[in-house]
Image (cartoon, rainbow, N blue to C red):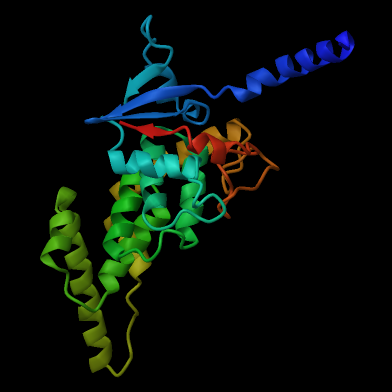
Length: 271
């Protein structure tokens, strides 16, 4: 037996061994437990600080994220981080991006948040109603989505439905939308009677004025997330370390240059 060859093979195996190990953690949300790769989730300071030490009989750490994410939102986050074998070479579609954005914002995962925002703004989440844009922008602190949703609700010809008003009950947002709609209709009537003379209704300016308090809070959180990304060397447009772009789903990948996502996805289990 060639002992030098055997020795080099052992050394090679030893060198590769760390790369073959994928650490997993258990994430509890309501009545479901997920076993998922830990690597990208550890970008969240909330997960880093909240992981419980494993029991003697258990080698995996665990955390309960019920207070931070719904099951749907967390599954969307995992689909973006670790695309399934079916969608690995395609963009995750539909509300997956919205779910990932909501979860990433609550968990302070800045790179995933930036990637999800860019995907949504490029239409990857499909058609969103004005109400969905407003709610997503408000809950995830994305000022452009929030303003766009408000403006579209003010401008839409159809009367707001009971369900739309129901979702807008907090903070008197529904009543303010209705006031702006009434203001727009009155100005349009005046212009019609004056044969087009008079000032146009500037919906963008009026939305900024009417929702100044909400926008201040949204932009404060938005600014903090961007500042933290800049300090960590992340590109706020791509959500990647500066100069690094790419990704299996056509948008800047929150995984960076990690190519193991497809394989890791097979290790994710639901119970």
